[in-house]
Image (cartoon, rainbow, N blue to C red; front, side):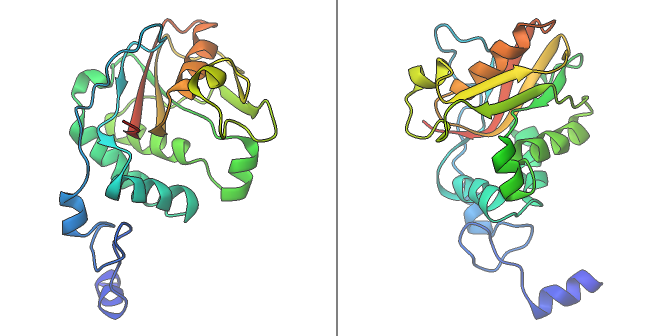
Length: 209
């Protein structure tokens, strides 16, 4: 009742277009979400068994990612997790696997007060009833991190270092909000496969095409 009264006084706004909305997105922006074939083509030489990404990084999907990361709209993690689960087949979530968020750098966590991939992984863990593990540690190898670097430079670890500080499950599903070049996912997979993990796949909310 209190929520309904507040909505009448201050109607909630759509995080994409800032128009009136319920549940974070207006009807028009929900229709405009750029859904794509969720199973991304397998790149030659990739360490990932599969990479699931149901949305293209544009339009309302891009706006949601930006609102979560840069405007502290942490409630959007639940909406994004629901959209992921609704779009992906059950085989994207192996019953003997564990969800592992791609870690943000210490500087980003300190600036934002949260780790967006960890929030997303936590919501997914709740929905699909898989354990959440946090074995990965991330640090920039250069002051500017990966900004401005190409895929080959990122894969070389020039702008980023990822290490596994503890053992993870035999089967791991990496979780992140967006995939641009895929290099960060590959570095995370490499760190996990150096231990007891035998299979790594990935799920990102959206990806650059």
